[in-house]
Amino acid sequence: MKKIYQKNVVKGLVVLAGLFLLSPTAWAEESSADIDWMKFSLLMPGEFGLTYCMPCPTTTTTTPPAPVPKTGQTTSYGTGDDGDLEKGVAWPDPRFTDNGDGTVTDNLTGLIWLKNANCFGIRAWANALTDCNTLNSGECGLTDGSLAGDWRLPNHKELFSLVDAEYYSPALSNTAGTGKWTEGDPFTSVQSTLYWSGTSYAYDPDYAWIVGMYHGNVYYYGKPYYSYVWPVRGGND
Image (cartoon, rainbow, N blue to C red):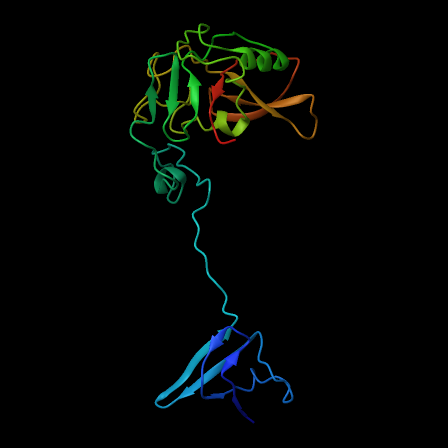
């Protein structure tokens, strides 16, 4: 049975005057002087079923902090595949900007890459870390004023972000992001083979993650072995 309850202020949340007709699901103990964390129906002349809640939940719409970009693949090999749907955040135009100082900015991620993708040759992982950590303006064609400590070995997700799944040998786009990389557009000396990341392999930290730029694959590889080095700077702290 529904009961009539009169109250001017309900828990400091809703200020109303008049009669409330409480639904059976909202009626608490008859002796209770408060109505808390429940829904009730407000009965007004000519208006029925007007539902309120207290305290009312808030709905917040937020933009994900790191939306997933498109892979770059535009060729479809089956209905509903990546090349058919091309889902993800659209790439900027141009994808890359050659800064004219030995660096290239990726306009999708904001990361700044060394233009020369083979300044150090093949290196063991520990040497690759040192090469990047000590890199500065005046080396590897840099005239950007950077200092030792500004550059680093990219993590495996940063390195993989360069991959364009439309291409292979290498899996990398040109400056505009509309075609396959060619020498100097925008990078130089890109190797269609393995590049070190700074990310260790959790299962066995004697290994680290690498990206194979021939296919765009991600692997793990023994740290004493040799791969190429592609320094980066910038990114969120």
